[in-house]
Length: 307
Image (tube, rainbow, N blue to C red; front, side, top):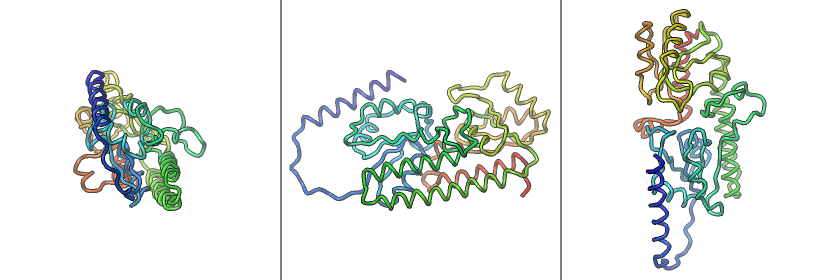
């Protein structure tokens, strides 16, 4: 991966060198345009396009359906970021490759918005306690702080439209608050308070916020496969508690979840941690809120909640 990434960076540097040697075009009248932003992954992209409205053009860097953690930026990715007003990412744990892009950014041209600080403990959110889970947007309190960071960044670059960005961020935060209330209400009166996820540990923040016990097959998103001892532990938990459902990430596949479900006669339910979406969902206009609503329906079923 490092060798391929180095090649990409070299190609990018050479491209810039060639471009700088070419004759400059004749000056033309400046064109009016809105803000431009490159956001790494889906939550950052969705929040930025919502807040920017019709006054910001937002591009998602990691293509739909592509694994975020192991993504290798291409030369044209560097070009896009270099030409944008903003580069928005969620932190080094989720996008370990983003640091190289940040290091090459001209701060006079492109402002970097790191959304990671939104997850720093500030009180008011049980989901902020003692977890290194990088899926910070799955605590809706944190997601609201992410919206604030984007709105503040857009307002710094385009102060004349500050009220517009703040208003849009306020609408997004209201939607997140309503979503939070629905989760709290509908996951309160359930037969179970534990759910099994046959994938990487990605719903820790969500579970903590609503007082749920979350058990994932793979404890770290950096590990590829679950350990046999962990699979045995989860199978035993399912037998002892009578759990009827196993969740799996619809974009990671259901192999591990199927192994657990088959051994215990359980059913499979698809969820999405929302760091990416399928090509079809992206094309059809999926939003963070629509993904979370589907997740809530699956969680209600898995926990056997009463309506």
